[in-house]
Length: 310
Image 1: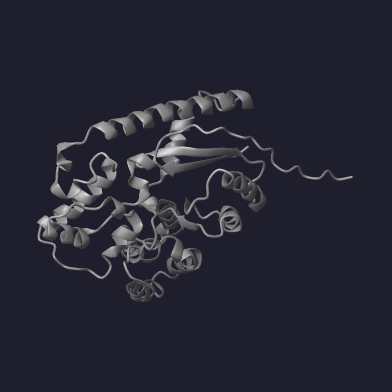
Image 2 (image 1 turned 60 degrees about the horizontal axis):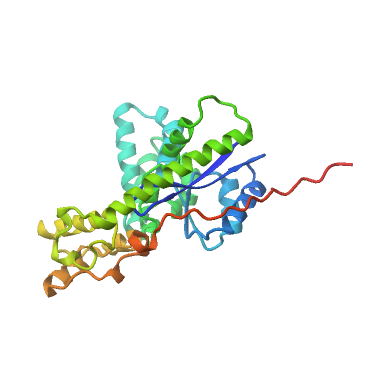
């Protein structure tokens, strides 16, 4: 019986488990039922999945306003499986470099131009590879190409395969492959309890201790109010300024839109006026007082029963 494992991004940028569901079958109806139970607890704004159409359809059905983006790791894995044999080693390296350049384009116009060059390069020389990419992945371009997914807060979700890493942790709680359902549930409960303790310890540490690297005048209103991960992202923007980065790239706001943090040009304004970065410029994802680890009560619902044939 497949186990659907849902994870989220903690404000410390570590993974935490959101929920589990045992599925009798992996079709749209089953996924929709699970998502409806999930909807009773939270309404997600972004869900990152692999290209499983039944799951994608279930998300569109239950969370119509949710952005469903795709893991780049899954996409690249499938491209390797379906296209690598068409190329020599050198050609393959060049193909993947061009592919990665294509999906990282920062504007829709530039993406269109780069896609045209990509097609011109491979349609004649490697038609099977081009056909696979064009028919399998281009219809979903708005779910993984940077110029589309960086228009809303997704916090780098596509670049890290969180579920796969979390699966390894789950498996460490099971010594054998088969368990009674009650035993399995208890093991998952133990894992969640340990996870909660670990995450709470990190949160409490960041409430009372900040590294010296954050003692910058523009962080005055953020210290002890914003998680270290977000402060480190802001430090990267400060270093860009210190290295002489004065240009205002038309796509620079992608950083703010996708990460929920001010980008270097905006921070430069604070430095020039000698004022600290405002807390209101930080997305609530990164605020310490908005992210307590709590253990809510859980209502277990039974899935709908299939009608028996007479």
